[in-house]
Image (cartoon, rainbow, N blue to C red; front, side):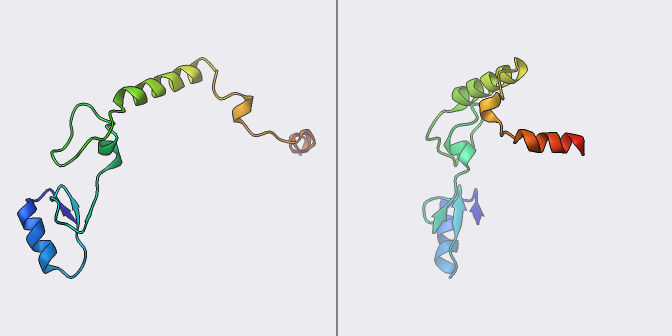
Length: 98
């Protein structure tokens, strides 16, 4: 794993090693690359490391979804019966009586 190093250094290391190198912010010459999902999907709008590439901007979408979820929980609209598992009434009675 080569992280946040100059591309030329990553190329030299990759050329000299017999094992694969994985880069995160180490340029294009590593054998494989990692990009943190949060960076790829744009979960954050305040800071992104130089070596990341944002393929989407989900900050507002995620914020809106979390806000709606919170509101539904606070207002007791979630979870509903449709989101829960049922128990056979006979088994429920047996459990209550034991």
